[in-house]
Length: 128
Image 1 (cartoon, helix red, strand yellow):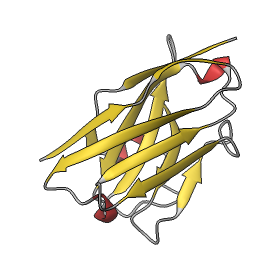
Image 2 (cartoon, helix red, strand yellow; image 1 turned 90 degrees about the horizontal axis):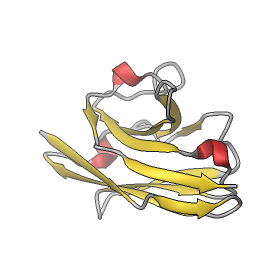
Image 3 (cartoon, helix red, strand yellow; image 1 turned 90 degrees about the vertical axis):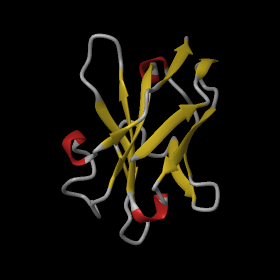
Image 4 (cartoon, one colour; image 1 turned 120 degrees about the vertical axis):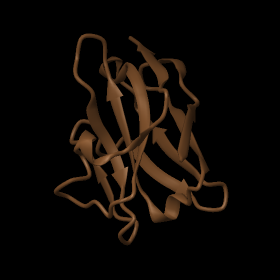
């Protein structure tokens, strides 16, 4: 069983930064999993934000966050991160981390149904 717990959300002004963390526990070594960040804004469907594959640690980003967000992981701390810079009001959402035991790449890393384990989410609010 894998448990994922997000933290680091909050209220920030446009242009500011936040770093989200996702601590993994259970029989989990995040270096062996594909890890992803998704978000869901009010009234919208959940969408892919960023992912880091178990294959070579390749990273993938949604076009809307490319150049502003950075996904990374610390295998010693078993923690996934999302550094978010130059935040915009449209980044306001609940952010979820997710884990997949599959080695996902371009074709699948953005698909929700590829991820079996999900955290409870953390709220990010960006004020204008």
